[in-house]
Length: 373
Image (tube, rainbow, N blue to C red; front, side):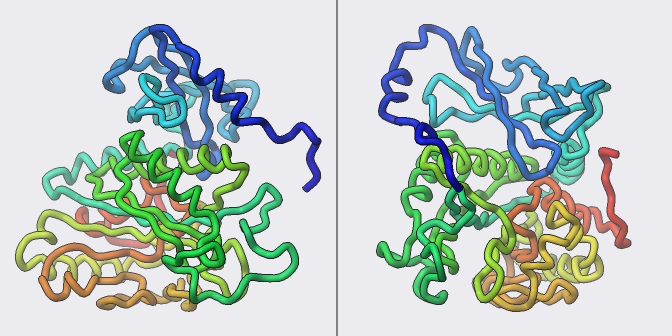
């Protein structure tokens, strides 16, 4: 993709301005999910003092007609702060502020899936639902070509890249390292990272998080990844199958447990949950990517460490199953299970909510729902 000669900005020049003293003011970057259900937007305001909790932050607004969230005749949308993080780009005392979006009449926006998830999580607090999500992503150039892949042709076949070391095996480690450190600084509950099976594909893990915190921390980790990639001139793609053919797709495997599952004899509770998940397979498939299963249909083929989208399966240590029970859980007879079906571009609020609905609220049936409608 051709660009103007002045398209690349000099980061060293920017740094001299970032080192200027900002007096007693604080920059707060408000962040929200746009109408696509996948994209993130942000804008910054000045505060007179450093906020200690979200309660210290004012509501704000934005033009929803420019974010696929309203029409121009009634475009005001409200930003409601819900989670507060340190800003690893501007550094202390500046903040990143995750927000819910409300419409002009103060109803949850269609893609504000946090609103419903929060209600559900409050109903099951006594069960202490724990989550961990494994976010895979692919690094692309601004031309959407996989980072460090040959311009014409393909790299060597998959095999040496997973957890690989070396310039011919690990494509883009600088991004993964910068992202990891930025998340730690921000207070995101990131717990690991590794190179993935396809070259230029990486994964980071967020968790353990309880209840609504899972969605908050994963969305913030995604935002920070996009910002890191922006600084490097790259794109982070969450497409579930960025390269067709004999290459791995990208998922967001979700680990789930309750207090009862983690206690002695908890394997029985895990098996009961899996039985309920089996009965609602299509319901979960529709909830596990923003396009109601169409994105995942490209990924869940039964090949490349995936299950078949049309068939539910479960097994110990089986990465080709819908639900995997780790070996240690089978041995200890307690712990957690891994749902391997969510796509890389899933909404974590939706994924965690439907797991709770099926496994704890014991809902039946296979109809989709949207409490925001």
